[in-house]
Amino acid sequence: MKWIGLTGGIATGKSTVTKLLREKGYLVVDADEISKQVLGKGSPEYETVIQHFGKQYLLPDGSLDRKKIGDRIFSNVEDKKFLESIVHPKVQQQVSEIKKQAQQNGKQIAFYDVPLLFEKKMNDQFDQIILVSADEETQLSRMQKRDGFILDQAKVRLKNQLPMHLKKTQATYVIDNNSNFEDLKKQLDQVLKSILT
Image (cartoon, rainbow, N blue to C red; front, side, top):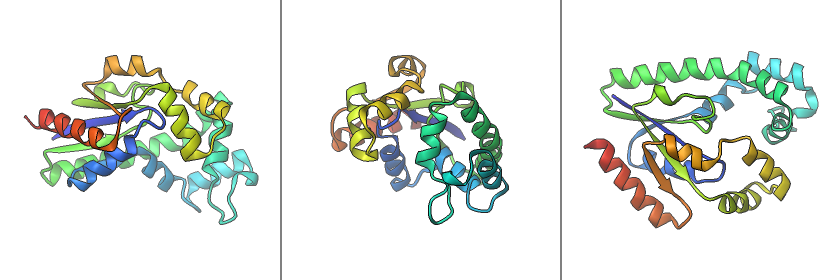
């Protein structure tokens, strides 16, 4: 089975690519979705995180306020390391089980959507890597529109990621998402054709 890494930068359109791949019937394992499950209300990891950060990081329904925690860990390296040490081992364990299952089910190709693939030096875990890219101006503008971030918040998040030009040198395929949805779809189809041949 070909195990394809899918990554991007914040607000480059990686989620849209994931959605398109799923619509085509491909298995896409999403690191963020799994980490949300790992930190689900009542899980041991959830309890550990609340003990560390405090109850002011909860939403009214009792779930974790991911945006608030995000703001804190993006400005505090120790807190970021702490959170990752709680979440990452669990995510890795679940992903390897899903991957094994997909291989047993005879899947020819599966994708793993990992936002920080290059930052976490996971390159060698994949047969090939797709990078969804956009220029910085586009990313900042999308973050402000989509997430309601002020410019400074958006810039801090961008700073926590490897610059796009460095990611491009490490990817097998680059999908440039500065244009429109139709263009994105066209590029993805070309990439899939190349992977499948």
